Length: 460
Ligand code: PMP
Image (cartoon, rainbow, N blue to C red; front, side, top):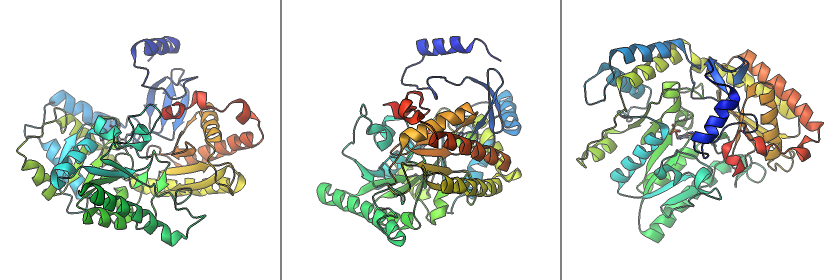
């Protein structure tokens, strides 16, 4: 399956691909040549357990998804200016998974395009410009999204915070501004929501303007697998709407049943957003994404008289693939699997927490888990060096994890939804060995692991 040796591939990559496109595991990058289910295989056909690819949602190269794409590709590819069954079926199916007011769909090609369109819709509908996003959030790579993604714009070489962008404190109950060490659990949600209210009031006082939008993930992935405290969104949405804004739920990472309990993560908080953006898992690796919104917002957009045309958005091939993904989620009861396996994995990780001082917190819902690595349980100080070493050593055992969060100390687990209890056992028993090695070694002082980070932003 290889066209050239791994060394030649690397050399050609270094020569022809922009250096800002970074590799996982820079000292020993992985070359992968095929994948199936939850496994990826390198050029020597060694299998790696993929615990991080939430794009390969129903499993890498799922035969039904591949077949649906091939079949439609042989038949017809065109744009959405023609009538075609696949696009309307896809829109109807997506809308049927949403609360009833979210009833109008626009198709795009990526999570970034979805969020960019969401912001455009919000600006047109509200007539406002100021946007509130979470500290540590990432919403995409377009200029409009780098501007609102603290994860990127705050890097030393980043573009900095623009005047229309406001950061809401990340509602992290473990080590955020309002945490369970210093505050009562039942107060935390309200305190974080008050933070958003204050931003709205400041914008009103200083600019005499309303809010355009509050954009958020309902489980914060790049911010460190943060689970929002109960009722946080309910209260926050109220403040944003009271100040003229709309609420955008970015479900690009966490949608399509990853939580196990619901199709969409915002449902965990009993709220109905005004705009929902979806992507990644939707095409199981094929670029397809969408924006779902209310009739009222779509009508404001329509009233501008400006046509929305997107060459690839909503083409019959992408929609055939998205429809097949939804079929597989239902036919193989993958949400149920996410509930069962996710809970099992979390329980087993909790046991490791009892055994090792560097595990400060284990949190998760469905197949979305975070393990917070700290100096010790008492000081809760982030330990990014240990997290990076764990990540690196797990790869040596052929298990792919990632590390993220504001302090780059949270191990992320968000595998394809076909992940099994046996896979969970393998992860936990390997993690056990790796943590034992960490506790008994002086590798931390010798090798801080950063040089071989799997997390591109970590070396900046
Ligand atoms: N939103 C979130 C929450 C994301 O994690 C990402 C990508 N990691 C995006 C949007 C952008 O999606 P894409 O890379 O498909 O443009």
